[in-house]
Length: 138
Image (cartoon, rainbow, N blue to C red; front, side):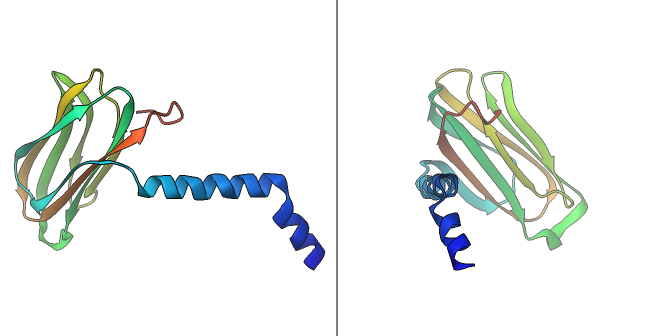
């Protein structure tokens, strides 16, 4: 058995996949943060400035605690640039999180438009810049 384990550890594919995994994890830790907000859920617009076409962006908007969200609570989240909607989702008690990746059609500002209806909770918003990748549809 020790011989098989040693062969497994020195197999080039195993080594390459682990190097890729750990370099990806290390790279994910240092993603540039574009925006971070938290507070009471409310209707508002949050500007995302200086976005460019050389990156793609991730957005996480999360509601908590859920115990204060009633059955009629809705939070409509939209990422827009000019008149184009780049990503959108309506959050509610059964689905209180929105994670998406998006790209902008042109360099400049975009905004996150939040419309809250009967939502008594807190939120966290985080937007990060990622290296442009054709492997991720955004």
